[in-house]
Image 1 (tube, one colour):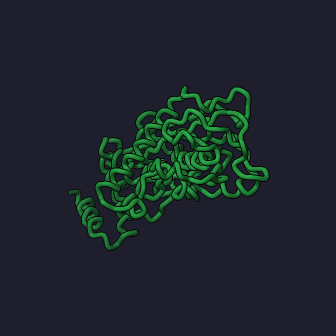
Image 2 (cartoon, one colour):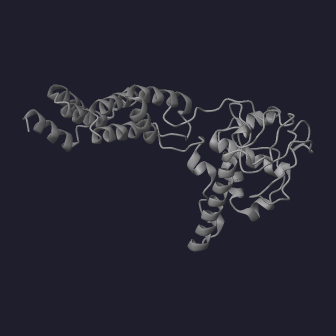
Image 3 (cartoon, helix red, strand yellow):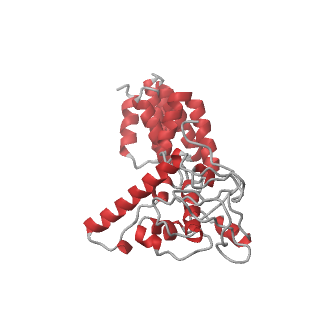
Length: 306
């Protein structure tokens, strides 16, 4: 719907003991400390083995540009830690990285994009399932991941070189910087406009409600009144007053004191030549924001028939 995939609810490729499960439930808790490492290849190659960080929350496993090959390997951490295959076909990461070094990076890719191992790899859980081929390059998503990893690395190195600051003083570009927990990092207003244009305003309204239930409280989308206000304005600019009214009404269902939603609704009613409803909406805007002289002036002009 509208070009944004539903959040995956698949079984993780790696099975974690209770400690790992608890850690995985914390959204993006270690993204800044682990994923920030991968953008500089030298730093990655020096990384010590780790047993797991990131998030597998909601039953999602690791993901990304590393390619572990199925098969037995020493566990990432003793006493029931996940069995990590020996990495093969590494093209972005140093070829001598171990499975224990790769795993936490994969977990953070999973957290950053909200996907499972299968998003990039030809594999299904469990990790030692016959036929799993983590080294395969068949999936386009894996090829794209390598391109984007190189892009993030190059951006960070260029910033460090041209700004003359050490890496520790710069904000690194990471997967999560843009993706924020979704595989396709579109702005919510863009999703709304795409769905409304393709499938109609009712589908867009339903999609917003579904996404809000699924992602509210996460960093994936902006559910403030700014998003639907922008969608209403864009609809009005496209001469779709009914869509503008629907977006404004939806906004008010969640943000009852959004004066600007009433104001754009008034403009939409004026476009529809419904003066009475236009006045009512603008009166409500002025009531909510009595210090806004612009609303008062517009209301005066509207009542005067200007």
